[in-house]
Length: 90
Image (cartoon, rainbow, N blue to C red; front, side, top):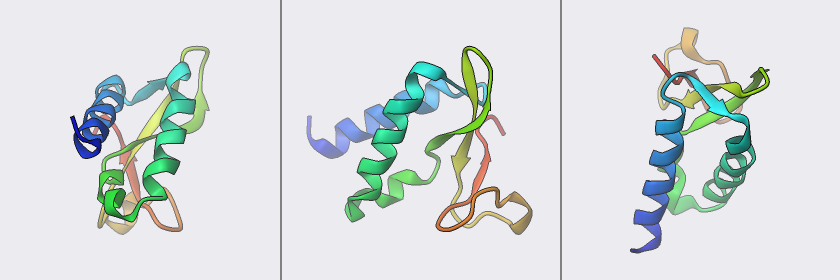
């Protein structure tokens, strides 16, 4: 398996885990690390669209997750400076 395929599988894992619009707390740190890793590699930046991002809205088990959206409508822009988001379950 090459790096691009492995990255696709890991991202898919996070998307599946966030189907209900929430990300389990133990998966937040790895997803943040992966987000940073992708962000540092221009050839993979397109993988950030649809990437689930944890918010500070959390309980004892999980945090609300948003997906980065490319070319979002103005009323859907929940993140500033380089990204747009929508609720992961919408």
